Image (cartoon, rainbow, N blue to C red; front, side, top):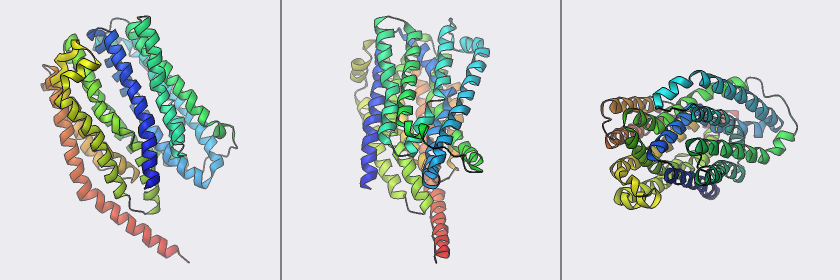
Length: 427
């Protein structure tokens, strides 16, 4: 447990340092752009996040199979790295080409006049397909310093590039998107540096059937990531579509600030997942780890939500300026919704580590509910934020009930089976 807490502290500091630079970047861009341009940038950025949502599964999937190979056949780690980079590099190229064909439709839906920002968004999306490969292997090897620094570098590089391109040179939306490309490139280079021993070490083929096993495990993780990404970003895209330009900019500010309650404790999941995976494979009880992570998540995410709920105007004025004070009512609801989703995500991560997938029906239903609500109630940023809050609360409540009634019983049965097999195999 001491080691678990130490790893949590290290990752919490490193990843939230990255999150700090993410928000410094948003504050810098928000103060440098008009509300209309700020809304355009965040709509394009959210679309990039949605398009790259499948890649969020890569760190978890590679972490799980890196742990397995590290024990059984360390020489195959190089093959895992090169094979992953090759296939995802091909996928990145396909995404960029497909995006160029869809460019007119993207411009029309988001009301973007110039094609250049859309092309830059596609380039950022393509590069984001490759970055998770080395990060996932670092997490599986439990090189949390390299994992944390590699993840943080994306945010630091983006902020420094935006300082030059947006704040000093005034390149606007295009400069903000180029800054993202610079940050992702820096993160990829640093993560590969920490894996230089794997990249230059001995190489053996991957075990027979491993790619098929990776594929089957990737499917539920992919569904989970896609649903979470949609739930956390689609509201921005819908706000840009339904609301006037200034109103969508105000909602974008509330969404950007409110998501701190989600991302602040999310670093804890990078330690929770491999820890629970090991316990799951060995038949040990990991429920205590779940509740410890839940407590830390509620303290961090809920604490920030409480501050924003009580004093939204001073927080907005300090970070974004007086031009965005009209966002206060929406901020109260968005930050509460994100704190609830952070708590729900602890359940999701634990269930993925234990190969329990029933909660995906709840998450998918919640997303459909949010989209349906926003399609009817979108007259103002406050109405959209209220739809997000109602959906998040319903998802957390339903997931908690499902886990307590179904999930814990399934885990108890699994531990009994594993212990029985261990006794039978004992000499």
